[in-house]
Image (cartoon, rainbow, N blue to C red; front, side, top):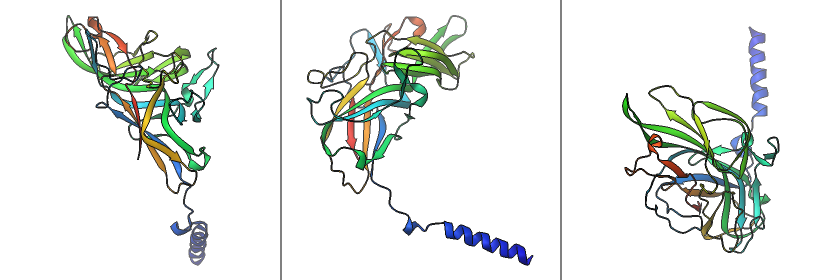
Length: 296
């Protein structure tokens, strides 16, 4: 017994000597932290960054976003800064496994509301003053409402999850829409999607499809002064006041990347304003509708 007690004391002393008191723990270096916000009330913009309303014969809804992924982050000093000429902080891994160069979906960081999707020490960011933020989005996952009418069983008002790939080109081995997995093992251009019914009345596998070119709105208010390549998803937004980074910050700089989801899921409507894929309603847009960077 005496030896057991001595052994226990020795172990406790060893653990104690290896543990640092809170006061001895050095403060972490200040970081730049970027988080997503999905705002259904934020102004709805078109590709040129101008307020946009629904055209006649169309209807839309504001989805409930689950996850978003970015593949490129750039801080631009002014409106004349060409794409790539600003301070590029992040470029997601790419691969040529599928043939042409593509975003590697398996290595993407997918974040939800209020979650950080990017973080780095501020000391590694070039000091300067920045007026604009560019974020190229790669993937979005959200829930929508829809109606399905069956001649035998009647009308069902249901919800479904959309997995939407909005990057210029993405290599996908497999992905999970909501609960079910879809195998692809190929490159998919912007606009590829998968759809899974939530709690379906009859078990059903996800369906997939490819939206036509131009079906993804990418708001860029700087289109005239610094355009973005066709088919990319580089969304641009201005800081309310220019952001200055000195490199001597003593606390984190947190930036909320507020994305407008205001009627971002749009379709040509049969007249009732309800999305009914089985009644001729065709999706015409699955992009986001604006970006506002907010410094917390």
